[in-house]
Length: 134
Image (cartoon, rainbow, N blue to C red; front, side, top):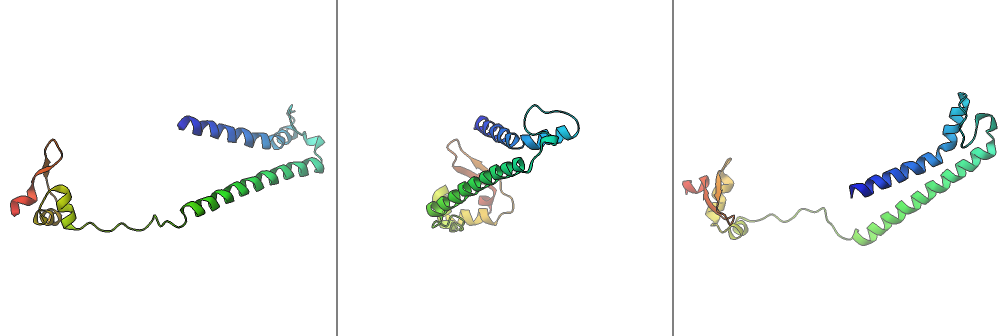
């Protein structure tokens, strides 16, 4: 997945540099360095600048359309589901059934600020400091 991310990042940077090639060539030629690509400072015409602005506008509109369609798709697919609501709290009786304890043992564990618990190989609770007070 990281390779794919790196590939897309390089592709997008290449596209950005392709779109900005005229700006770079004009900037270089302004300081006397002739760039073999794009426009030169002395050749700069309004029509060329407007053509670049049209290309940028098309890229912006395509991006806006893609992102708008993606947002609408997500709204249709997932908009009716409320995924950010809180889950129902677990009762001590449910915890007791899940861990194989009594409700008194669960209440004792919840009342402790600090508890040391010992489990067996199967992961079942065998000892707890809170049980000693019962």
